Image (cartoon, rainbow, N blue to C red; front, side, top):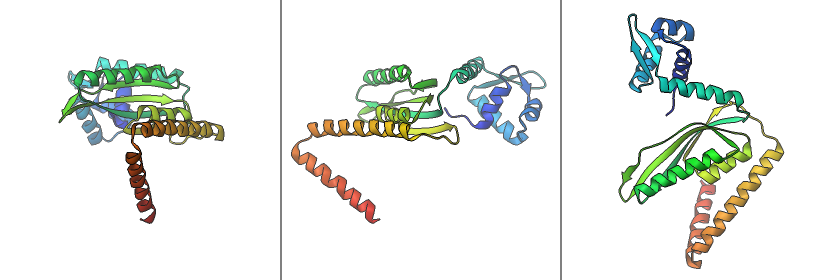
Length: 218
């Protein structure tokens, strides 16, 4: 689930206690109509609750625990880059899908180059002859090479850079990442080639280079 910057600010403001709309407005310097709209959405998502007169807004306990956990992780996190990713998974059986999702989560958490801030697994959905679901994760990676590994090993369908706005990599980091990338692509290509007949491989190559030529001519 993706939250707006205003919602994150509201959550941080309510972390240590409830506040009225007026108190939040003064502390956050957010226009009242924008603030009220964000609060209504957070109430609908059950991130907040309200009580008393004048009305005070409270951060739900599960949310406050999550915010505190992220703050604690940020204090010990030396990784350069924060990412938000979505990994889509499909399988012909629901139980097989669930196992694949769990295996991916376990593998992600074991990666030394990644630090998982939070994650969730979506409910399986029946799609004609197969089942589909996804993993959403907020994590950090320590370098370019780690990002290459994340993309090529786990194949996320969406990647968003949360922060920083600008990052620099030295030539050595880029070199290591590109070497890993080339090796992974070569291994994958060799594996696919072994599964295909000579005729299928020739047809695939012909279609691939035909697309490449069309792209260059456009």
